[in-house]
Length: 143
Figure 1 (spheres, helix red, strand yellow):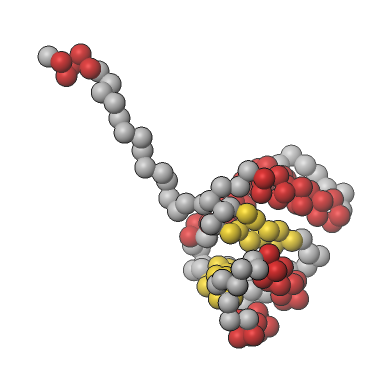
Figure 2: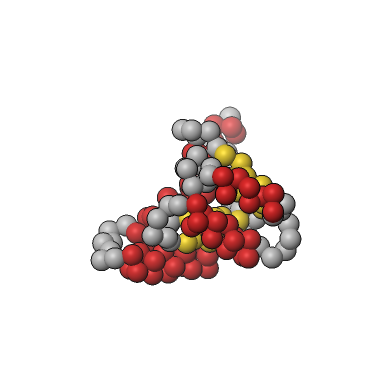
C-alpha cells in the first residue's frame, strides 16, 4: 500500500499493489504527479524501503524535475506527516476488519481514503497553541 498526503489541503492519495517493487513505486509516483496538475514542486518524503531507493526511483526525478525525493532518517518516522495520516487511516478504514483477498483490501482502501478526503483539513506541524486562560478563581484576584 502506498500513500501520499498533500499537507496544504489534507487531501490524500492511496494505491494498493500486489508487491512492494520499483514498478509499483513508479506507478504510484505517476499517480501523484497526475493528482497535482498545477505544475508546482512535489516533495516526496520517503522511508528507506528498497523500492523507494532503487535505481529507477532515483533516476525518475531527473526526467521529472518537479519531483524531489527526501529520505527520512532510519527510526525517525515521526518526522513524516504521512505517518500520522496512516494512523488515522488504519483506525478509520482497517480496524476490526478482516479481508478475504486483495480486492477487498483495495476496496476498503478506496472507501476509507474517499471518506477521509471529504473531511480533509490542512495539516499543521505540531500542536495548536493553547487557548488563553481566563481567571479561574476570580474571587482570589479580587482580594
